[in-house]
Length: 417
Length: 170
Image 1 (spheres, rainbow over the protein chains, first blue to last red):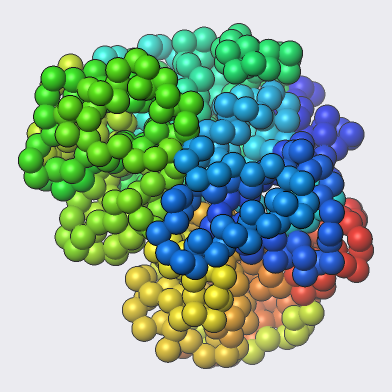
Image 2: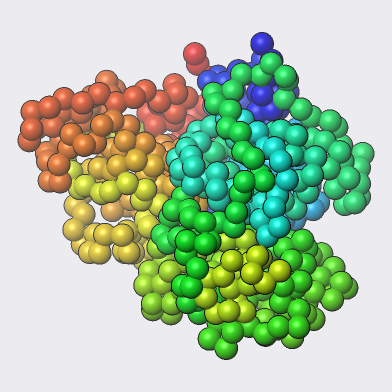
């Protein structure tokens, strides 16, 4: 019997023959916390009587969710996290450096790694072939101290991608479509594996978007193979030596194989208040929006800003629509400045926010008013997600968000391309 | 360690209650002040819940309870509110694990057979639920032995303090 990617990685890291359904103890290669879950993690760590980290250099604190802090309590949480970094010698990424998942992708994740984060979108690094998954503060606290955690080896669903994206259709539309098909619990406790001949032309930026939202179908991990695109990304980010090819076995056992023909997709939207409430943009056109938000660990990368800039260049946002842009990392921001994207976006009327989570989770930098509608490139649109239960959040690609910002209403991006 | 037999009253909730519903992100500034945070439990999804919930009540949910964010504050505030156990048709992966790690039992069963306000008696060891109001008995699906062991110790931290690591038993 062959192995899925999940079985392969967990076999390697648990030094056993891991099959779906087994419970294994695996070595954790990288563990991280962010600023809204980190304080509880540190308290759990100390309550347990732990003092030292198993792997200080593979332990990271990211200050990204409330960055810069909008409230004294959160500023005090930041102090707690900085002190812990000083005491233990772990790494810390300060306010303005970017979103944890983007920085993990840019600087740390490799094919075959096991990565734990106290944030559900830790799955993002699955794009690089890492078994990366989110857990709560207690589990991460224990992993920080022991360098290990337990896993139930997940069954896998294979998403077989074929064809080519049509004009105006992107990775975000694909993952929204897929979540709409299988539902918010369609992959609960399972791994999503991505394969098929279309992989060769799905960029790392797009893979990160897709893997990022695996958790919105309930998945433990969303895994791409380690291939030429992974290798090129690692070389570009100065760690080409960490590349190793990583593919599932041809005879691996999948619970289900779901074929998707990219050529038949169209721009998609997730409607309030559930991520799996997915419809084609053509069915929802014309809904007025007061805010468009382009950024987050889902769609705040250079390719996303390039796309938005291309659509918005020489145009203006609608006077009734605020346009917020938050690059996913400092590196993304610097490159977007070099390439002129930021200039185009600012001239179109955008407000540029510092690299970080920004408006995504309702803490600051774009909290919605009563009855307001936001079209966001983020990954969640639960009631109250952007800070106000009386507001509505729609999710879409950066192209749809940019086109909608120009018209002031939900717009099919193909009409402006 | 949680009592092996729990008795209490059912509070019915719907499907897809997210961790954003349980404790909205806009209260992140209260996460280091848990008693204040707990006052906002389920504030948007079930207005008035914090004043309605009583010690030993059970939360009875539909499918995919606890989807979304990994914030362990969600099971923490549920436990602080006095809830003895969560019964659901299904629970999202991270929440399920977090709740057990907090020593809060999550039992998966056909919750359509339970009405709001029903009196329940739950036997944690046997995974059986007696609905004292309707007279129906329900059985729950089994969790992996390592999760039962963590729950038995009252959560992950006491489990690790006792065992000094993870112990796999088959």
